Image 1 (tube, one colour):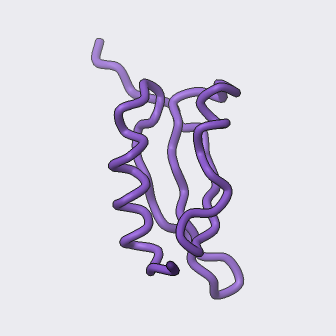
Image 2: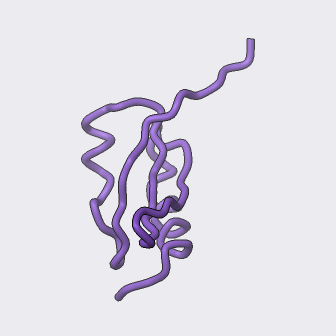
Length: 71
């Protein structure tokens, strides 16, 4: 089943947020096509292997983002 990128982002993030290191999700556009981005706190290979390259007809990529810590 193919679903729109916003719905895919919400569904996929809800499945992945239980894993330590998954810090968010977003939507990007490239050449007129939207895709889902899963934001990770580090480049942990085991964590990246949990992220599918496609979810319900939507391309999925990952980005590593720094997490701000209060001092």
